[in-house]
Image 1 (cartoon, one colour):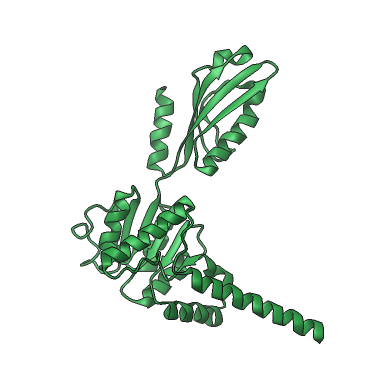
Image 2: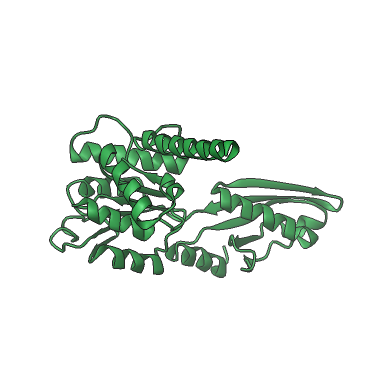
Length: 286
């Protein structure tokens, strides 16, 4: 493997970038000289690949297919049969590592951070209390941050750990006001997952309060997993961490399990549909 290609791959890991290493695994006809060639391809069309596949007029079509594989986060074997020859490409997608940000460093965060690391997540723990947010308490975490919630979340957003569709955020602070404060900070980010702890009654009340007092559209809360986790009857902090991690994996892998927040989400959707129905009826009859 050429030094420039290896360097591009390692740099993409450091920068948390999704890329694909593309290799010509079979070629004949006019494509025969390309056999064994490889290149690193980014998902952004404006970013040129490192290396060359020597595909000629087939380049644009192949690049579009390669970028589809990156978007799907799945390796693919591509084969093209043209009048001047055939060529096969193996697209080895190097995904960004999933990043779990645990907001709150209390009793649930400790086993959750350890479990996430076992599941090969990059793990960040954040709390505004240095006596809780420290590496002695979270020895396996990649980063432990002691500081105010909203400013530190914004700093993370601006840094290398930019919030993206491989970022998962769990809100398990010591008080519901801090969970809500943090939720408002990240609600509009393109995250893979936002989970917030709390009882069904409290979650319902919080969402309704934010809708009425702050004018936040109700649909924005549909993407929040709250109450957090899968319902496995968890009681202890470790068991609760299992149910949270199970829901995160379920979301990441597109699994079929329904979380505890599904009931509230269905209620909220039904209430909005009912309100729209009444509005239409009133408009028609008026």
